Length: 495
Image (tube, rainbow, N blue to C red; front, side):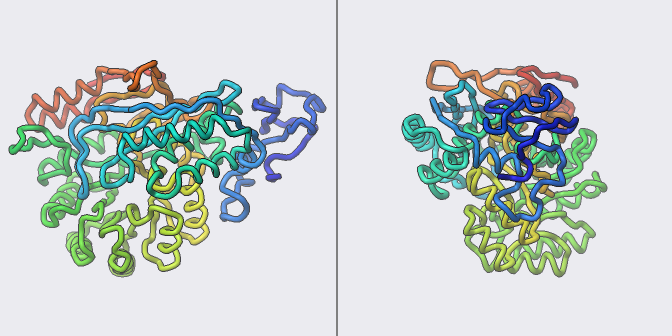
């Protein structure tokens, strides 16, 4: 039994009692009121008890105890299309997304507790498309609804056997999210506490991209910044909103990338920035970018996935030069799609940072990679695909609870023109705060039809309309002056 959960007969102000499916404040119980034979344990709030060195079973004693000791019976699993428009198409070096076509997943336990997950679909990045994700969710439902009660850990292992490898990683992650969220509701704890209680909030970076008119299609694309003037204005606005770390999509045009980075540094001299090439450079091009930036006195805090995911030699070479010559850390993102990949990166010193995304490796895979990365002394980053606040909220709770991620990149819900999620975390600029009582706190309007019913909020479509009709400078000012705060399906709009 994990040291954090131990039989006791006395109460204290910093303790919680676990009794059956419920967590109760210790102050509400008297000594001897709960029998140790009915599996009652004390959960100390002392963070010093948490496993920080990677030894033992896992990363959080509460998580370990629930995994080993909590019996879970799944009563119902459902998956439905989760289709949400983007403000404008989203483009990276390897793919373009015109709208989110993810899968929402709902899990109900036999005690009535309900959890929510999401399987993100990103062409050329995730292996599944939406029809396959729906099909595999259906197969998972048939299996999970018929098996007997199992410990949480055993149940998650069964999900991994049923949906193995990178081929089904996104669906696996969505089902795992929903199961764990349901369990968190059953025991009455928010996910950030289950994952370690390091913090009840996180601070994210922001991906600096703009709406730009495509003269060939006469449509607006959400693409990387295309000129230094736009970059400077955008950086200034993000600074006003409180964002101190900007993430820049690069990798298509080396000269343009250099000009944009210089303009951002001049406009927002105190900001930190991350370069994300999404496999867009060769090794020599990536090193040339670092050289030119160094000559200008501009040093990124991170260079993410500079080369193709299978170019292990190139990744290792860029990482070595970046670290030893320019003092820049390199992150493996697309190159890390399994525990095996992470082991290779660690053993061969191919990168300084590993980017964790649940849709790449699932929850159990992510926890395993987190453990080995920390044990090896590498740095951790957490990110996501283009997701709603369901998947993003789960990842944010994980990051907050563990408290071990130096880089947090969880901003993609800001790209959506609608917010389908009710409840969930609260947004204040770059800060996400968790005030919910159980799970990640978000859920969907689950109607009896084939598609999730969306909350057609007025704020975000309003942003898109302004961007389409106004001049560039007007578009930019209006977009960035709109502050949206989500709390229990309501929002505040101020301009």
